[in-house]
Image (cartoon, rainbow, N blue to C red):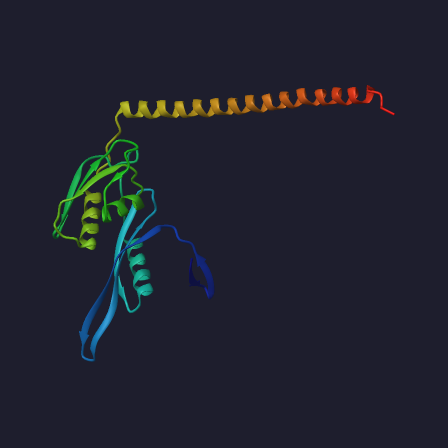
Length: 217
């Protein structure tokens, strides 16, 4: 939770997006007075519904650098076209020495990616994708910018009628399984009630027999 001042009143500002710290580095600048140290933060921000952004900022303190970077990331957000939990087509992008290849994946295969690509895909809301980092650099910032460049190249493609039919069938099967589970629960409850009813009269009969027996003097 962050607080912001609005019309001489402090109001709570709720977080709309999920954020992740991608990289944190200590930077030094030489000035007339000497060397000044600062911290550079790289933040990735996403809402899990197709929006994602990357922000870079430096501050005198770690927390200041992170806050600045998150604000920049929220300003520079882009929308990623997602169809059935994956990207619509294959795409590759290059930024400086970083090269990234992204491929669409079948449903329920998961994120076949690592490092920065995995973090960014999960924050963007992509569920199934396969990727490969083709560049030789390990710079996380350059890799993140390459992924953003690849996302910008994506174009919306209409899903095939066969895929739509498969989705409808899966939904029908899920509904049927839920109905069957409910029926099984109802049957089990009825059986329990019947067992309880049978046990109660047996106990009453036993009590009557005990009363009829003559007491020994």
